[in-house]
Image 1 (cartoon, rainbow, N blue to C red):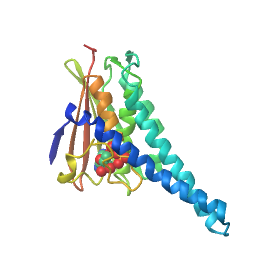
Image 2 (cartoon, rainbow, N blue to C red):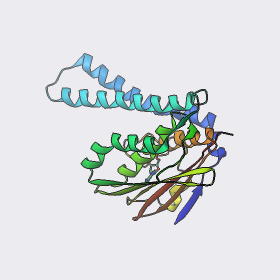
Image 3 (cartoon, protein in one colour):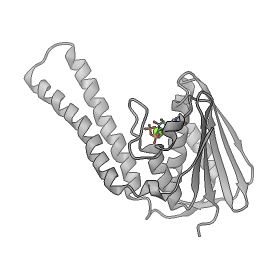
Length: 226
Ligand code: ADP
Ligand code: MG
């Protein structure tokens, strides 16, 4: 079992990030351009369908990368308001009902009653979305996600635990690095963006994982913005 506490050093990688962005956006663009060229030159039956599918999925990928980067670009000026974490977690869970059903994933919730509202940005939802998405994606053959929320002193602890494939020890230090992904169509930006949002809230993220057993992601958020 490997434990990891994320700190700000992961987040001061602006130069590396810029280089990574250029690289990541250039790849789908190069592919799109190649298909566009073929489009103009020839029109062989059968290759058309594949081309259209590839072009669409490459455009989707660029969109996905850009929208994740936008979260990085402007989280700080968003206002902090009192929000009900339980309500937000229920909302996010509903967003994933379809995908969870499709993958045979049961989502269980153990959310303490009477948790206080916390001062946070709307983008806190993006953290829950990214973590829950990873949990579901780690269980292609089905499994279980348990979402817990409880209060300890002046902090709210949110745990999202899956029974998925887990994270090997040699990969755990790379989690949250820009563009680190082990997925064929991953962006490797979800956890980096999440860590940035949590850092803005003066919170912490902890990951505990066992290969073949599952992963637990814990997000600790202060109730009061100091
Ligand atoms: P992406 O999901 O696009 O790959 P993320 O930043 O969300 O990017 O995650 C980075 C990597 O961390 C994933 O590719 C995966 O290897 C690992 N990871 C994150 N969450 C989990 C999880 N719940 N179970 C297993 N691996 C995970
Ligand atoms: Mg992800």
